[in-house]
Length: 215
Image (tube, rainbow, N blue to C red; front, top):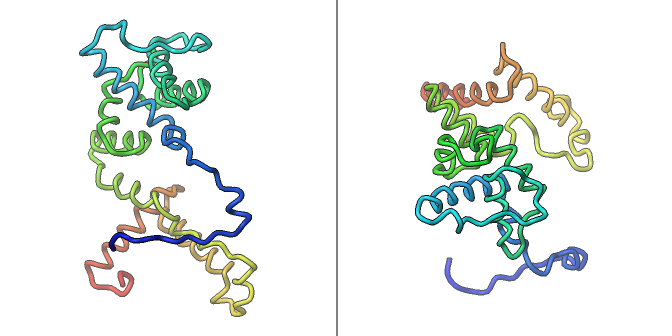
């Protein structure tokens, strides 16, 4: 590609519904990730700056923990900060994940999460997978579950599947067949993650053996 002019065509209705300006990235990003990286920055900041320079939360904040107050105070300086209740909810989630201590300060585990270029929920799985010696299957599951569900057909607008006629090409029949195969792959577990892992391993085995399933 090279420099040029790009034209986009929109319906009048869609054009009228468009926002004049895109929402700030702070409000578009998962808030738990924003809070985690804020806590990590505060940890680095506190190591090189006086405690008095660490920002405090607004007076109307209902948080009683200094870690939470520091995170809320830092984010409150943004031109369009997130709502205080949303920050508290994100902090509570980070505590459940073990990324923050009960007081709201970043933990050693949280520092490891923050150093990974992943959403905090995925980072937690990666770290624990490495600690428990099951990193490869965890990475396979995360990569497989980050896209479209391979056991679910695309939507069937207008009942196109019903118009195909034969049982073998029926949209509903194929959907049931996929779900049945999913249960077989996951057996004896009842887990979507086990089904994804078994599907990838089955594909890799077929590819190594040169089978038709890998094509």
